[in-house]
Each structure stands twice: as structure tokens, then as C-alpha cells.
Image (cartoon, rainbow, N blue to C red; front, side, top):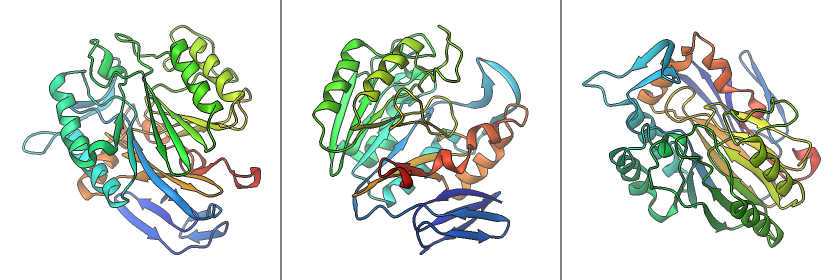
Length: 336
């Protein structure tokens, strides 16, 4: 059994494809359910708004279990007459996200598998058809490999009650890693300087952490120079509460000394284990990130099947700790 989700009032525990939902819990309280012990998060006052994010949805993908084209094994695919697994996983995510009635849905890249127009059309049919102008989306490396021009706006923003969302195109067409332009960095800084509410920055590529990551021009995420520049901007603007990425297909939350007030977050993929999407509850005294596993029966069966990818290492890598999945953003130090 494993704890998937915890908030100030609820918890979700998975035992394979069996799901246990615990509701009406008290905040900041220790609980035990079977072999799983956990503490609920603090209550942050009245909720002001809710939004959701997805990433690495990969419409058009037919096989998973490869890294740079090399099968490490096991490799998984869906066979006719079963629908393609990106359709299964994304329709499950859309159904669950629709149920929380979010003000905005942010898709943080890798909308497609190969950057093909037909794959992007499927993404827009599923997500645009469900959320309309509530959808904000941006490219990932899979979308930009061939210089595809869709979802290529360098900067986007959306004002919500209690928060401002910024979305950046971090891609380098033809490359798997990412960067930021000076124009983007200046824009983020200006947004942080004039904000009266928390500002959350989203993009596809994850940050390079100078405390733990070797410096390299081949770093898989945001290149070191771009990461250092973003850390500098965030560090001198306390209204910038964090940077939220995808790309790595794992759940991880880091705090970095150059911007100690902020969080630097990665959320696991929709398309395979653990089959993730994230909910953000903007409240009077802080923001909760709430990780969800897609729980429709066919999606859960697929995500459990793919847990064993990459010689059995993927489950531990992708799932992360509960502190990487569900946590307080901002608020007072004792609430974080």
C-alpha cells in the first residue's frame, strides 16, 4: 500500500489498482490506515480559486519503455482493438480535472510524441474541446523537435483570484534540453515586481540545481546559464513563489539556496506510471499542490502495468516522496 495524495482534509491510498479514499480528516493531524501512516497538511483559510496542470501527455505515442530510442525493457504498447494508451490516460485526466471545475488548465509541454500536426490536433480535440479558453498550453521538446510552430508563444499569463500564472516556452527546436531568452527573463522579473498576489511560473524543462547537478552543456533540462538566470530573478522577487515543470516524468520538489523562499517542482507524466496530474488550491494563507493519480479503471490498469519500466526502476523514480507530490507553497514557514 502507498500513500498517493494527502491534503488538509483528505487522503488517497493505492494498493495496486485498489483505491482507498479517506475524507473529512482534520488538518495537521497524524493518521494510520493499515500499514500507511501520514499527517494531513495544514488548513490555509478559505479557498480563492482552483486550477490544474498536466504535462507529458504524448498524443501519438505508440510504445513506451525507451530512452533515446534504446529499449531498456520491459517495453509496453497497446494493441488493437484497445485504444492507444495516450487516449486512455488523457481522457481519464480530463474527466477528473473537469470534475473539480478549475478556472484554468495548464499543459506544460510534450503535448505530442513527434511534433506532428495530427497529434497536436488530437491534443486540442481532447483538451481544447473540454476546457476551451480555460486551457493554456506550451511546447515541450517532443513538440519542437522538428521546429513545429504550434503552441510556440514565448510568454503567456493569466490572472486568477489570489494568484497569477506565467507560462514560458523553454524549448530549443531540435534539442531535448531547454533555455530561456533575455526577453522572457525580463518579462518574468517585471511580472514579479508589479504583483500583489503570488506568481507561479510554469514551463516544460526542469531547473538545473547548482547545489546537486554537475554543470554541463548537455544537461537534460533548462541549461545551466538559463537556470542560473531564472534562479536570480526568482531569488530577488519574493512574489515569485516557484517554477513548475514536467519533462522528467517524475514527482520532485526542490528548494534551492539562491531562491530559498520558492519551490522548484517537477510533476510526473500523464501517459504512464503513475499517471499524474496536479491540482492547485489557492487559499488565503498559501497554496496547496495536490498530486492525483488518474483513477479511471483502464487508466489505473495501464499505469500499474508501466510501473516496471526501465528494468524495474521506474516506479521509485517517477513516484517520488509524498513531500514531492503534496505540499504547501508560500504561507508561513511552519506551514511549508
